[in-house]
Image (cartoon, rainbow, N blue to C red; front, side):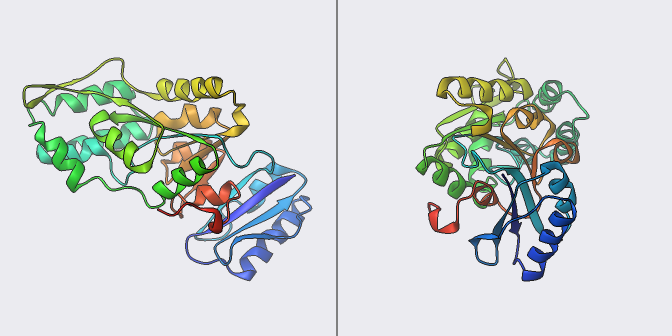
Length: 293
């Protein structure tokens, strides 16, 4: 049995559900009766044949609605490994930090290219951090207080999953000075990120080695699966950039969240419209079972 979950950024209409049911039938997927997760917002459509045909038939067919197609078994994940910048928070921290040095546009251009997979992540990170040499370390705390905001739904997602027995790891190609307080605020069990090196009261322009990159994220997922005794189908990975691709491909549910095209094309699921609570609907949690922010 498989489930197609429809999640509206605004409101689902009865006609939307009928449209998707018709498409599933036409694709030979034999859909069952819809199951509401949140009236007018999210609904499960069970079907028992041809999952790839079902995904192809309905993906992106209704404007403003995200669709997640997956096996019905093991929907509620026991491990989530998540990216931070532009996933659990709304900004790219290095870009915002660069603004305090007056070079945001220059660094943001490199960040965007790296997230699209056009540059080697580690080399691009070293190059960007080098441009911050001499920036006062107090800019980190200012940036954290003034610029860093949690992505809508982040705390509800992690708190609800943990309340149902899941383990949560934040693994970021960003920096510990941001990731540690963000991880604590959201409720992650573990935080892994890069260390910005500081001498006295200024940034040295260097990052501690080894750099947390795509391979680190993949290894974190696989290591946690081994530690917790979990199969891949009990896991979720979520991110937005090319350095998230390896872990997204290895997870039972790999999610591209408001992601770059290269990530959206490769992920098993995409959230293009909704906030992070869409991942609770995808796991079959009705709103009544969420842990409030």
